[in-house]
Structure formats: C-alpha cells, structure tokens
Length: 211
Image (cartoon, rainbow, N blue to C red):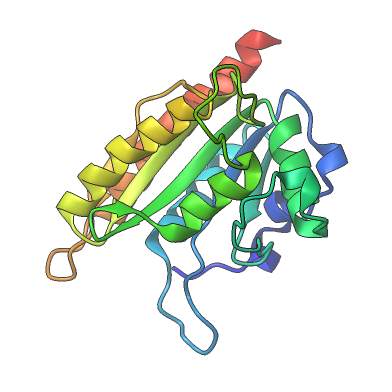
C-alpha cells in the first residue's frame, strides 16, 4: 500500500476553515517514500486506510499528510513567528479539530524525527519548563499508534509519545496501538488496521457524545 492524497481527496483536500469541533483530524508525519522510491510507509498506509474506512460512517474526518504539507525544521521559534504558510495552515487545522489521531513511526528506539519536528514546530520551546505554558494541543483528546522498525523501537517510542503528549498538555483519550515491523517477520497489517479503526472510532464516539 502506497497511497497518495489525490486518491483520498475527501480526507486530504480541505481548508482549515472547514474544520470544526466535531472533526477528527489524522496526522501522518512520515516522509516516506522519498522521491524516486516506491517503498511505502506503514504508518502512512495504515492511517489512510483506517480513516477512509471510518469516514464512510462519520464524514467529519480529515487527514494532514506532512509528506505533502511539508513543515520546515524547528529552529526555536513559536509558530506565529515562523512566517510560513504551511505552518499556519497546519496549526489552524490542529487548533480547530475536536480530536486528533497521530501515526507515529519509530526507529532506533525512539520516535521518528519527523514526528518530533511536527510537535516542536506546533508548540515552540518551553524554555525553563514553565508551568502554564499553553500549546495548540492543550486539553485536546488525542489517540495514536506506533509502528517501529523493530519491537524495541516501537515499545520505546510508545512510551516517549505518551510523555511528549502529556508534556504539551494533550489528553490521551484512547489506548495506543503499537507494533514492531521487523523485515523478517512483517506484522499483520490487516489485523493492525482493525485495531486502529477501533481506537480511532472511540475518538469519534467522544466527539458525538460531546455534541
């Protein structure tokens, strides 16, 4: 599976202004595959498949594919100081969404740099760890799944993701789905996708209950 946003325009083609508090926003930070390469990103493929399935019964779902909405590298500034149109659009989409579902790749026993960059660009740096630092994620219900290059990377990245989300003030609202993907023993993607659909579906239920 190697999906392009044009294949799922109902998920990926939107203006931040269209998103409201009853919307679930998926975020895929993976930059795979690189230009000229067709090797797919497992996290990206799973997120597209799961959210496309859920959108057939709950249409208020959108997906930010950061392989195409490319963010600059974090340089210490807060989002409003970056003067970057993509940063502004991504920030507005995150801010307006009622809940988020994140696809987290993991390598070398850690979250991927692209995921960490997304968080840092959206939040800036809380120098000194000041109490009360407000981010765009504050009190926002969030779910996530992790697929690692190996089992240990996936496990460590899941713990790191939880710590990161707590640090930025997010509310982890559903159980994370976690799997390693060693090349010699690929995970059962179809079974994994069903778990992701179930957890993301719980976020949709939260949005419905909130209404």
